[in-house]
Image 1 (cartoon, one colour):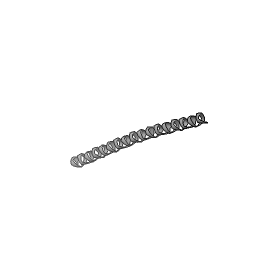
Image 2: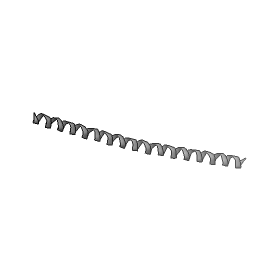
Image 3: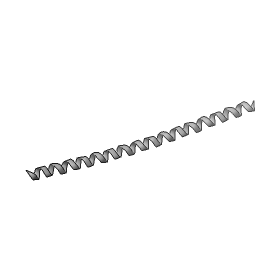
Image 4: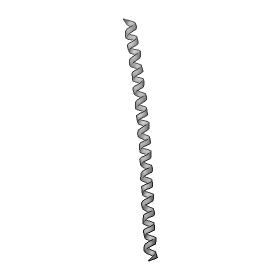
Amino acid sequence: MQGDALALSADALALSADALALSADALALSADALALSADALALQGIAKFNLLRINEMLYLGT
């Protein structure tokens, strides 16, 4: 009986470790998604700035 309880405890600990590893992976994926989102926003800002500069040059050239 005691051996069964110890085996169940070991299984529960292994499942907890797996759950923690999955949580860590999910956090890493979230961090990567945030970094990609920040990069996308930066690229949108650069594109908007370039568009404004082109429009300004076209306006001044006329």
